[in-house]
Image (cartoon, rainbow, N blue to C red; front, side, top):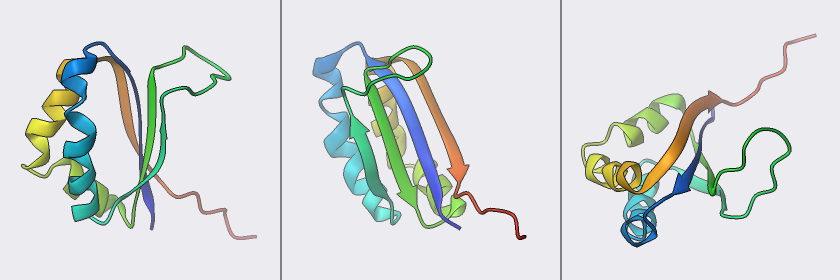
Length: 100
């Protein structure tokens, strides 16, 4: 079942953050993931606006967790954590409506 990683955060150190996108992209692809949404100017409907919103799609929850827990991702993730604030990341599964 398809799984999505949804993240939002504020970039507080743009110079350091510059290394994150080119570092994370190949690792997402390595695990069969795809960037679905990447927006630096989203329009909030509810809650506080964040500077960055990202949605990644993976073929399964296992693939998403394999990406997130990949040892090669750890130093790249640290770049994001060190250069952002107010972060939130969640793993959600594709919605499957109940059978009628």
